[in-house]
Length: 91
Image (tube, rainbow, N blue to C red; front, side, top):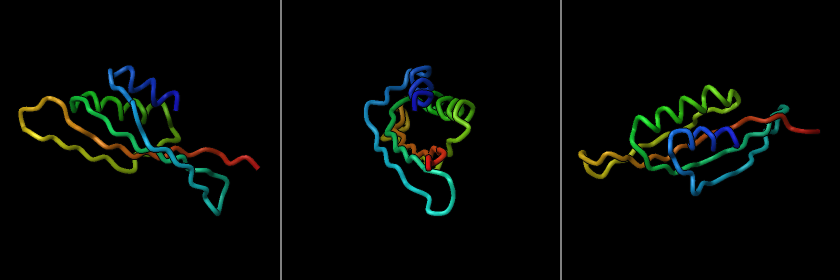
């Protein structure tokens, strides 16, 4: 998660809140850490943030992203990003 927060900070994106959940995979050696992040920033910053996560966190998968803009002239968009970060389960 430190790399996700660093990627956000590099783009000037504040991650003030989020939802976090660990989901155990029943067959295998992986644990899935699910992260839901609400973000408000301009579209290019959000895209760079997501690209940075893909480059810096190879075990992360983008599961869902939703963009919302109230008015066409508004420079910032609200985005909801859902990530899965896979980790090895300790026996």
